[in-house]
Length: 182
Image (cartoon, rainbow, N blue to C red):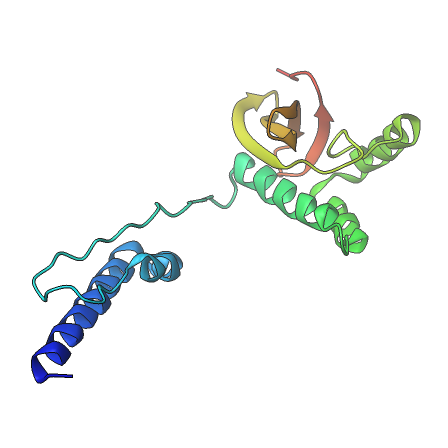
């Protein structure tokens, strides 16, 4: 292999590494793996050939302490994760989450509702959703209402359930219904 060919290969690799580092710094640590995976070093390209870089926009989730929508999103995300692990669902975690997020009065009413209806009262279903979204619905009386939309199934066979979650002013869930409290 000639010295000139080695220089071309090294230049191509250096350009690819440099592009990956620039992307990693620009996109943040969470996107670093996908950004580096998307950079392809040209095998037999000239040193001046442009390096093509493609990176999908990283997903973003944010929240604020004390915000009703963040509190409900945290609860539903953790609860669905605990219930949705089909190989090893964590009933202990799901129970602890209920104890932490629900008022004791509502927990009692919810248990009675679940006994009567035979489904999970938090999800209003026997299974867990494939997707969910949480939206602020504003103040209601002395509390705050948040809308949780659960999507069950996949592809063309999906079903959505909209739940209205009411929080007391101290951020504990006092009611989950299928109609707005406001």
